[in-house]
Amino acid sequence: MKKNVLDFNDFTASILDRVHELVGQHVSLQLISAINTDPGNGLKGKLGKEAYLKDWITTITPLTAGESAFKVTFDWDEDIGIPGAFLIRNNHHSEFYLRSLTLENVPGHGDIHFICNSWVYPSDKYEKDRIFFSNKTYLPNETPEALVKYREEELKCLRGNAEKEKLQEWDRVYDYAYYNDLGNPDKGSEYARPVLGGSTEYPYPRRGRTGRPHTTSEVIYIV
Image (tube, rainbow, N blue to C red; front, side, top):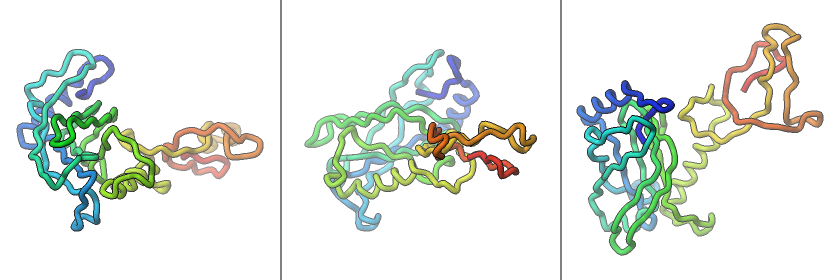
């Protein structure tokens, strides 16, 4: 799903994405092997060659929020074997919503499905390319060796860095904080409010961490 604002297309984003396509800045994907590791890549799953979404420019975005289907052709590498994940890099100007990817007719395995349901922002918003794993679950001790480090890195990303400054909309951090931003003590003590959560008096609730900067006053702070 290309970027939309409410029920209307963001035409500026659409035009800029087309410009990026024209100058060779495409959306690229790389398959990751679930069975074969690459000694030169820290024993992570072997990476396939980059492939690119086709016909981004000629695929018309609907006037209301809707889905568009794109094709991508991968050069098959027998060393990849069964793909267990893929990397995606968005070299466009704007984010898009990736619902799913289906690999058809994988030699010796049939179709492989990836349920993504996530926004993919431009590559300069991320320290590493986005990764999605196939729609197959494993117990921790049964996870293929080729995917273990990729899963560890993804978990580290989702846990976030508690020292990081204010979180942005593209940060995928599942971390919690107390309700300690209900007041504004910098305007005066009468604007101070107690912290909700983490104390015997107010043990709950908790909210998602935002990383907003602290107030000057020590009465209450914002995170």
